[in-house]
Image (cartoon, rainbow over all chains, first blue to last red):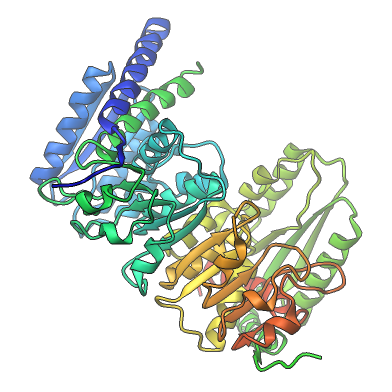
Length: 284
Length: 284
């Protein structure tokens, strides 16, 4: 049994509030303009997990008063065909946000596909324009999981300025943008990854730890600085996070559970950004 | 007197070799196509330091067989006028690279001006597209000073994978891209800045230190980890770096002098990238 003393960061509750606010904004858009905000979801192939994710996102859209337009493409779709399909959505005035479900298959140039998303519809925050905007602190959409992490930190009044933040993982849509957003909030940010030597000693420096590495129970409580804020953005089979929760909760001051921490925030940010996109595109 | 034991990283010599190679490539372009690679320099106003910088860059272009096309605009130029001038250069097939001399005056939206540079002509590495390419490890131009730092590290065979790199400073064209390039080479990267608490203890972790903060002699030798590689990208009045050279050289294994370290590499990378741009645009 855990002798947890940490406060749980309740992503489920925060996501619910975020989605409620988003639904109210969506309804207001529809009331004022007659237009319902619309998220286009693009799925290539029929990977069961991807099918489930997309269906879940569509259901969540529906509950928030966001229309979804689904584009399903066969697994053998070429890069050119996928780029053409996404370009059509970028140009469709009835679509306010575009989500390309990852992964798209190894024969496709995923970066080219992402870049076909118009920056003003990149509500999933995956384009190079969105990445640079996060890096420079300019207006734009954030990657959804890092955006959800920042909302959680703010909801729990976590001081970031001058604090040491350690991000474990450097993916283009999670670790890297999370570090840039933390840097933009004046944290002293360290990026760790698979090549990092003596990871334990780096993790021990963290006032705020973001684990985004995709290895179950990879980070142990003995490496958590007492009083640290621990954000577990890991998503591993069996709903297991990257942080060994029981041991970490004994030392952290605040910690996200898995599930119910970062996960629900990711989709909440997707919905919120879709509605923001609709507001901007409709000139509201 | 310093009891320096560190090896100097000779940016002057490396820059000379880089420019020689660049000049040979420029001559080859001219020989094969009849076209001389061309860098457009854009200067707004008549700030004496900026005038000197631009003149120096033009002279260095001339010596490397690169044509320069100079656009001088009055200090009262508006953002719209500057964007229009840069857009014209972006569309001019005779121009292969574009450099907008910083600063442009507080009434101008400098980011909008930078973004008018076509990514394929952004040989100074200042656009959001170039920033994102550095972040994602995609082909593109690097910011010149960080690019020069990476060339220096490579010339001195500095191992980066798994090492702790600390970047002091987070500007859009120096600190931030330097960190991304080091991360792309598998260093464990920490960004420090004005809000960092207990900077000394963070600097002491650095196997590779990049000082890019713009405060003369700001980093003292007592904070240099013995054997560290020290890159001083500071440029302060009187040719003084950000690192207190005498005390740092007693502990570093390798160190860049100021002047003669990073400085000469910046312009060498600008020239090299201009020729690369010309090669690509001419289909060579």
